[in-house]
Length: 133
Image (cartoon, rainbow, N blue to C red; front, side, top):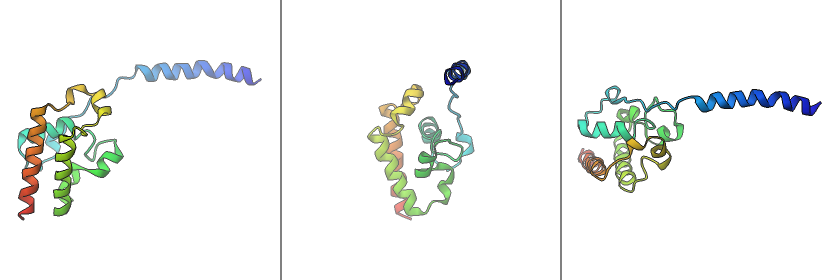
């Protein structure tokens, strides 16, 4: 009896697995125009490329958007903004962001050394500017 049930379930599971394997992986959604923070266009383009897929309100990665959510940036306190900018600079400089799993899925979104310099320079300058306020 158990063998009969198992034998009848295996083909159904195989069909589901086959269908799931054929489903295309969704491409990252470019959402720069939805977030207007008044930052330089080149920085926004790079953040869109490497950060916004995980760190915005529309992202599916709850842990990532819980730690940094660009969609809620304007609601952050000054000290939190400065802390987040310092974190962005450090993570990007150390190549901790974007994470390896993300890069494996979207290799075109890896940041070049020049792009890393743009982001880190901007984040440091923005943090310094906010500290003066």
